[in-house]
Length: 587
Image 1 (cartoon, rainbow, N blue to C red):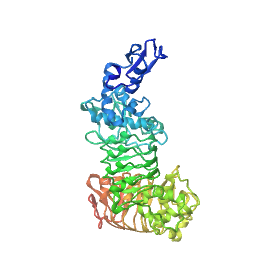
Image 2 (cartoon, rainbow, N blue to C red):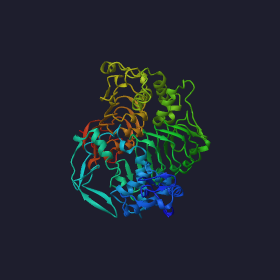
Image 3 (cartoon, helix red, strand yellow):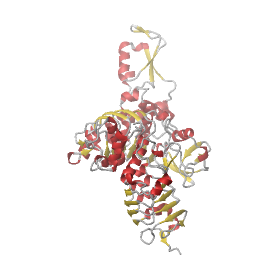
C-alpha cells in the first residue's frame, strides 16, 4: 500500500521499525528514508508488512506536504525525478525553499512565475550563490545614484532614485510604497556593497528585484541577466533554458565549469551571449541551432571542443570567420576549438605564432575584431609588439593591464607615433617619449597621468604632431577623465566607441581635421564640464544635446569659449549643425 502512493519523497515519509526482527536484519530503533518508489519496493520485498508502518515526518505539516507535492508535479518534467529527490542537489534545495522558506509563496496556479523563480534559485545554488561578488565586487556607485530606501523601517533596498515613489509588485496586485531617501555614498565600502548587492537573492522580493543586474519586461519575465565577473563557481544548470524571454546573458569572467546543457537551446529569443573567460568544456549542444537571433557571441578563453552547432545559422556561405562573421560579432578560441564551418585565420606567417600570441589574439579580437588579421593595421602591429616584442611581458591573466597597454600602442601606431613630438618644444615640455618601451605605459611620457591602480586618467597630446585617425580602441580607456588631442592633424570621424569614456570630464579636440557627425554614443558621456570641438570639419554635433542642451539651448561660440548651461563649450557654430545650440556671434 505504501509503495502505491503517487510520489514518495524522502522528506515526506519514512518506514519505522516496530522493534521486531524483519527478515534476517534487526532494525530496532532505526529510521529508513524512502527516497523513491524503487527503494520502497526493495524494502517491502525484504521485510514483512507487519514489521513496518508508515509515519509522517514530524516537521512536515499537511499543508506543506500538499505544496511540496504540487511543486514536484510542476518541476519534475523540468529537472527530473533524480535531481528533485536528491537532498544535496541544487534542484531539491530550490524546490524545498519554494515550498517551505519562500515568504512570497507564489500561488501554485501561477506556473510561469514558479518556474522562473525556481530556475533563478537553481542557478544561484548551482554556482555558489552565497559567494557571489565575494572576490570582485562591482564598482562603487556614484553619490548621485546610490540611495537607501526604507520600507516599513525594516527592509533596505537599492535603487537609482529618480522619483519619490517606487513601484513594488506584490502577489495579486501592484502597490505604491512611499519611502525616505538619504545619500550614503560616504558610507559605502566594498564590504557593505557586497551585502547590499546580494542581500535580496532568495528573499520575498520578486526575482526581478533580487539583483540590480536583472532586468524584466512588462510582464515580469526576465529579459536581461548580467552576472559577469560575479564569482560564479560551479556548473550551468539545465534549468537556465526555462528563462525563455532572455535577450541578453552575460556570464563572462567567472569560473563556470562543465558543458553547456542541451536545454540552453530553449533561449530562442537571445541576441547577446557572453561566456568569455570561464572553464566551459565539451561541445556546444546541437540545440544551439535553435538560437537564430544572436548578434553577439563570445565563447573565447574557455575549453570547448567543438562549436559546429553554430554553423547551421551563422555559417554564411559555409564560412564563419574566427573573429567576426558576416552576421553576429563572433569570438572563439579558434586555435583550439573545432568548427566545421569556421575559418581560423591565423595572422600572417611573418609573425611567430606562439602560445602567448594566440592567447592575446583571442583576448584582443573582442576589442579590435578583424583588424587583427591585417598585417598592415595598427592593431596587428600592436598585437605583434605586445605578444613578441614587449620586454615587459605583462602576465596573460592580467587582462585589464594588457588591454590598456595594447590600446596605447594602437593609438601610437594609428596616429604616426614615430613622428610624435617632432616639434622641438614638445619634448622640452613633456619629457622624452619612451613609447613602446619596457616602462609601464603610465611612464611612457609626462603627458600621461594615472591613478593609484595604474589606470590611465589623463592623456595630454596637444600639439604633438599626431596624424591619422583616432582608433576605436580609445574607448577601452574607461577611466579617462581628461583627453587633450588639440592642435594636431587627426582626420576622419570620431569612433562610436568614444562613448565608452563615461568618466570623461574635459575634452580638447580643437584644430584638427575631424569630420562627420559626433557619434550618438556621446549621450553616454554625462560628466563633461569642458568641450572644445572648434576648428574641425564636423557636420553635426547634436549628440551632445541629450545631456548638455539645458533648456533646449546649448550656447556656442565661434572659436571662443563661452559658458553653456553648465559646461564650457566651444564649436564652429556657423558651420556645424546642432539641434539644441544657439550660435551667438560674440563681440
